[in-house]
Amino acid sequence: MKTPLISGLLTLFLLSVISAQEVTYEEYDLDNGLHVILHQDNNAPVVTTSVMYHVGAKDENPEKTGFAHFFEHLLFEGTQNIERGEWFKIVSSNGGRNNANTTQDRTYYYEVFPSNNLELGLWMESERMMHPIINKIGVDTQSEVVQEERRMRYDNSPYGRWREQMFIHLFKKHPYRWQTIGSLEHLANASLEDFKLFNKKYYVPNNAVLVVAGDIDREKTKKMIEDYYGPIPKGEEIQRQTFVEDPITSTIKAEYHDPNIQIPAILLGYRTPAQTNRDAYVLDMISTYLSDGKSSKLYKKLVDDEKKALQVFAFNGSQEDYGAYVVGALPVGETSLEDLKSEIDGEIEKIKTELISEKDYQKLQNKFENQFVNSNSSITGIANSLARNYMLYDDTSLINNEIDIYRSITREEIMEVSKKYLNTNQRVELNYLPEEATAN
Picture 1: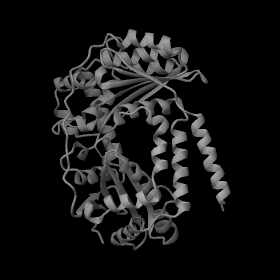
Picture 2: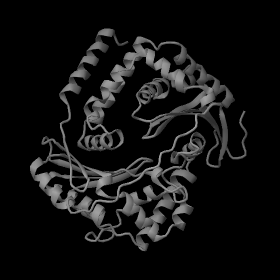
Picture 3: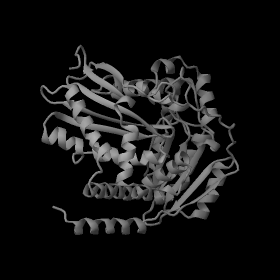
Picture 4: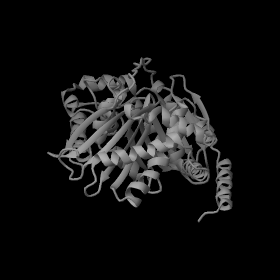
């Protein structure tokens, strides 16, 4: 059993680690609007070059969904100076690795190279921004890739469509109601001109942040950045729509039949505030306390103690405009979905009416301290955090002080925020069932 002394020493150790690892950085803008962030760390001969574009699924036309994710693939097809099919060969043959990912709010590309190949990474990302080739062969090729991804991750995967089904009920007006994979029908019906216009609008320097992190010489790096990115023309200013959801005031009951499963699931989803809202940080702690991992209250109760659930799982996603907290469970034996729902509600009610214990509160603080340390423990992690904090939070300094927000959250605040958001009349109740089954 961990004594208070050991717990206190662990906290002091984490605090000392955090204070010692402060991330230094420099940021500035090019004349074309590209925001640049540099982080110099010469401890290892490695450098990450990354570009985050402020475009995701929420920026799509409702009749033309899936474009942002499609471009995550399409912009690897080649450029005026990188032949089709050569991108990954160039990276690997020069000792590097690369990847990309898309969310509903942004798209992120990055390369990791030995630091003597910094210029190569900068050139490749500038090529992607300035000289992409968007043609029929590339679109047709990536259409096949995206179709296969849809089949593997959504259509033929057990529980693969739970998020899709939950979000179409949580959001009625906001583009968060569709997933980044979008509609294959929309992509198939899109013209080549549709893709070119999407690229011209969003993949421009004034809608992007370039992060270079690792073993660099800052002044030499600035010169290379100006040489490669300075000539890229500024795009037109992007006018973004604002979508405001009506509050959920009565329980939304939904049902979906998945042909790929044999065990049903209950999912309870709550719409939560934007990630910059302080309540979103409190909800991070609440979701961790209730449902994150085998030490969480719901797992211990439903899986370990009462043996009513085969698994308890949770999704807590804070995004640029709204977030969602979804908790669910798979029953064991004759346990009904209604019984699981009642048990989950019982634990939620406790956190709304009673202060969590000092011991549990300290465990939460230690867990968030540890996560914060880990997020800044690699050059790739630092690059990602710098880009995300600048673009989606408008506050690059969060890389060093976001943990202070979690430290300042009180037990009383946890109780009050639970009362504000985690109510039965403000949620979606989704019975996720095998084909032909009925909820019990």
